Image (cartoon, rainbow, N blue to C red; front, side, top):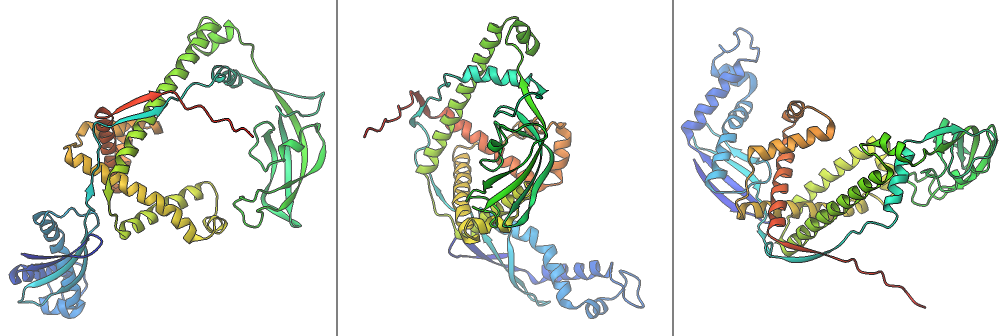
Length: 441
C-alpha cells in the first residue's frame, strides 16, 4: 500500500491510497462470492453462480463498491496511523479508480484536529469573590421547611388573598378568538407564585368562592407565540375553591419530626451548617470556573468553519429536542427570535466556546499525560446511576446501545480529570465581594 498526502485549508487532508493489483483483485473475488450468497440467479443455487454470471446479474460497479467497502476500513486506519494523523471526522471516500489487473487507487478525505497553542495553565494566582450567605437565608430556609410540612385548608368566610391557592376554571380569548391551549378546569393556581401572564393572578385576589368574572391582561412582548405577542386578552374565570396554607408551629416537637434534632436550636444549627456547606461548594465551583476560564482565554486555536457548522447543527438538534419536550414549536420560536439566521448566530457563539473548551482540555491531557483509567469511567457510570435512580448495570446496558453517548461519557470523565489537575496546579484566593457603588445625583 502506498499513501500520498495533500494538506488542504481548514485542516482537511486528502489521502491517495494505492492498493496493489493482486490485493484489489482478491478483494473483488471475495466480493463476488459474498454477493452470490444472497442474490437469486435463475438456474443457479445461491453461491454457485460463476463470476461472469454474477457480474452480468448485479453489475461490476456494485461488486467494486463491495470490495472497496471491505478493504478500506482497515486500510484507511493503517494509513492514518502510519502518517500520525489526529483525525476528528469519519473518513470519506471521494473517488476511486478500480480496474481489474491494475493497482486500485482510492481517494479519501479526512479532517484533522486543529493545533492548540496553550498559554499559561499552571502556577496561576487568581482571585474570586466570596459568595456570602444572605442575612435572611436561615430565616427563609426555616420558612421553606415549615411550608413543606404545611397543610392546605379551605377558606369559606373571606375573599382570596395573595398568599392563597385558588382552584379555578379559566378560558381565554384574544382578537375575538379562543386561545389555543388557553383554558383549564379545576386548576390550582398559587396566587403568590404564579407563572401565568402578568396581572392574571392579581385580579383573582379579592374574589370569593363561586364568583364568575372576567379579567383583562396583555401578553408580554417576548411571548413565544407570535400571534399573541403584546396582544390584549380576556379570560373568563370561575372560582371553585380557595385554600390557605397553614404552617406548623416552630417548636421542639416540629424539630424532632423533621430530623434527628431534639430542639429548635439543633435544627437551626443544622440549617446554618448546610448553608455554610453550600457557600463553600459555590466558592469551589466559582474557583474552578475562574481557573478554567483563564486557561481557555490564554489558549489560541484556529477553529475551522466546518467544525463550527457541525457543532451548530448538533446544538440545534439538542435545542429542538428540549423544546419538543416542553411543547414549544421550533418554527414559531425561530420566527419570534428574528429568524433562523439570527438564532444560528447565537448558537455559533456557544459552538465556538464548546469546541475550544474541548480542544484545550484534550491538549492539556496530552501534554501532561493525563489518561483515563477504568475507575474513572466506572465513577461516571455510578454518578449517572445515582442521578437517574438506576442500577449501574442498567446504565451500562443502555449506554452499550448508544456508542455516541458512551464517547460523551468518556469525554466528561477526561474533562473532570483535567479540571482536577488545573485546580491542583493553580492558586485561587477567596476575597471579600466588592461593595456595590451607590449612584449619587
